[in-house]
Image 1 (cartoon, rainbow, N blue to C red):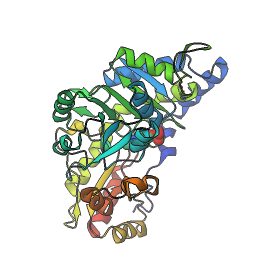
Image 2 (image 1 turned 120 degrees about the horizontal axis):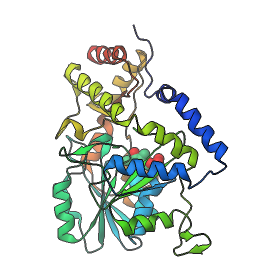
Image 3 (image 1 turned 90 degrees about the horizontal axis):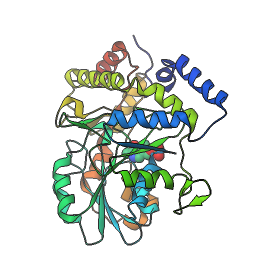
Image 4 (image 1 turned 120 degrees about the vertical axis):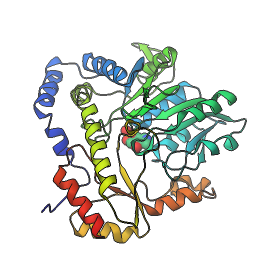
Length: 366
Ligand SMILES: *Cc1c(COP(=O)(O)O)cnc(C)c1O
């Protein structure tokens, strides 16, 4: 019988590519070139290809990818940006750090993603953009949102930090669904570095060049500064590692789908609400497998006693965080309710069938 299941075993994930990673890191060290070099160029090309988009500009992390997109669109003070109320705080921070105001829109309780039918009434004459978050790995229903954005002349920005490789309507991948897309390569994401990393993916030539410049002190030619940029570069070492790991991303996502399907077919506990796929199987890459349960504390405790680690994404909605005291009075009953019921079960490409069976057995016993 399986005794202990981690929520996410990063060592095991990276051990699979250990020889290639070691070799790639050594190559960078030996090259004597550590930022914005050949490895970064190669990874940017390969990741743009993976998304089916024209440009990938790598940056320091996922938060800065989103910040730089807004900055490049000149969105800031006196502007409003619509974001889902049910997301990681980075989405909101990208907006407020540019001086703009995040405007929260509630999720659809079934998909956990922003409810397109609630967007229009949150638009004011200050609204400049909508950030959609493909939460937990499931692609947002883009068509109605694109329609609204066209009607009000708004930019659409994807937060794809949890959704590398999800496909919208069997057609296009995240990164290729809006004006620009921010990705994170935080170690625990579906494509993770061995440190921080991020990227902006877009089909907009002008935007790509502007972000390429902004991430490097606003400079295209050394010591010539066109913008008040920032320093947000991906290390050559991380780019080299990501390029190795990218080759595995499709098969890893396939394995995640397999596990999710197995969970959904075999968890048969009536006090647990399982996640649903709203469209096609490939519209979800299962960064997280999130169930709903009324008695969450006890549920987590029971699983832990049986050696299974779980987590909550996320326990406190953003408008209830100290960081956003000024937004405390927002009425967001769906997000508040979800934050109390959601629980993430372990899912990762390195989980064995035996481990998945064990999780199912324990969950069904609760
Ligand atoms: C991880 C994450 C980010 C931020 O990425 P970092 O690389 O940690 O800065 C942004 N948005 C969402 C939805 C995320 O999950």
